[in-house]
Length: 114
Length: 112
Image (cartoon, rainbow over the protein chains, first blue to last red):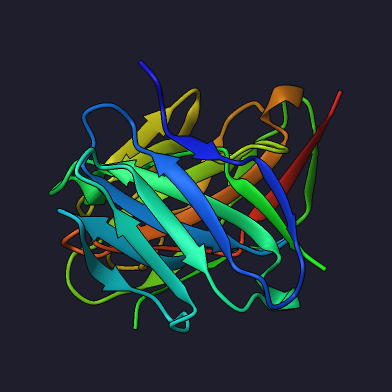
């Protein structure tokens, strides 16, 4: 049973560029949440997608946007990259209505902005 | 708003020592509480959870009890192993499970 799959694993971008990160949820899961984890810190909630809609959003600017596809996979887009966007981006999946029982996380995408 | 505070690390223990990592929370409603573990270069793995007051979550020798009166969810293990070296995150989820908030993490080093 495949868990959460994220791609790419590592990425280097230049300040001002745009980036797209991808996530396939665990089989049977329909809800995807995205987190940003800066070095040495805990993950920070970006947003959650369910039924192709953004259901809840954390304190992140509009430069961060997302999408969920009919097969439940998801993308995270970041525009106008800043040096401070360098972090590990984690995707987490769950079954709707069970998020309070915990998530399954992917291994993350390490984004470096230079 | 909801928040999680956990003890700062790093925590360094010898193998077979007793482990406690403190975690307290602030929340409205009836959150679920979690401990996640992160090994180097990996994502987070759910270690244990408790969904209501007085519940005890346990897994792989680790345990934590949901204490509503003290708003705490301390992680304990009776005898740590070198393989337990990792970063441990305390977290809470709102009632609907729409958003999970994480603490800053506590790094554990276990020496042989």
